[in-house]
Length: 98
Image: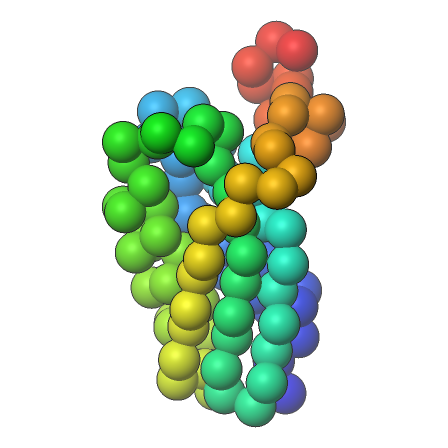
């Protein structure tokens, strides 16, 4: 059975190409729901007008689909609550000098 931890570990391989930090440490993942072989995820972006949003969405879905036992992945962008640097991991803050 796939757990949220498995999904989060897979998503740590998805990088924000502009910042060079993974989307988990950036605090972009808001919710992960696992039902049988299907993962649904709500995430945000550092900016609602992010030009690389489609790439990040595709990379996240592909990372989830690589998990053994998962056959379907759906990623949706949400912007409420808005992202702030407070959501970042201590490691990401250190990399960015925050």
